[in-house]
Image 1 (cartoon, rainbow, N blue to C red):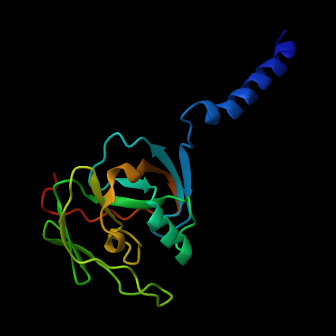
Image 2 (cartoon, rainbow, N blue to C red):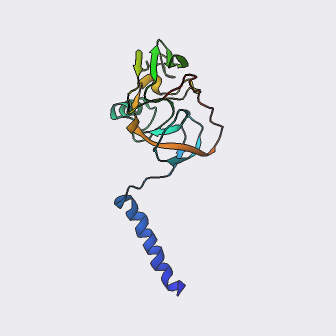
Image 3 (spheres, helix red, strand yellow):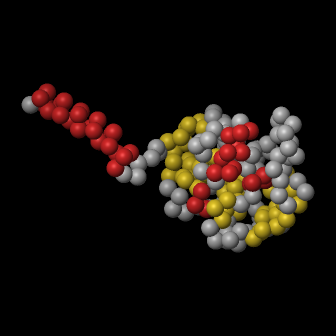
Length: 182
């Protein structure tokens, strides 16, 4: 009896696996990171039902940014950015020269050029994050291409919160601003 039903069960499972992405909101639940912005390794993807300062998130860059990243060879089109949340709505984010400040505290410095000597995008001034905006940065990685160069992003661009499953190195703790961020 079991031998007769095995092909039926296997066939049903195969159909379900093929149909799941088509019929439902199926997406992968794990991600392999090979970029230097966060430790190389395997990460568990969790829903973005809430985000907090310090969370590591996957981000679908807006199309203009995605094209820039691909043209420069920083990240292939369609591959998510992995960044830490460093500011949420209500926080004041400033770029003064090279200094990036969150609520008055310097969180990192922007570089003028990338490793190949190409000019990096820059913005100046202060911006209080509105509802639906987030500022992302990997403060422990000085040459990470992050909010230092592209500024705030829509909260809707976040596709997942990440939890490390296995990495080659410990993720350095992001520098959290000492001022409270609502």
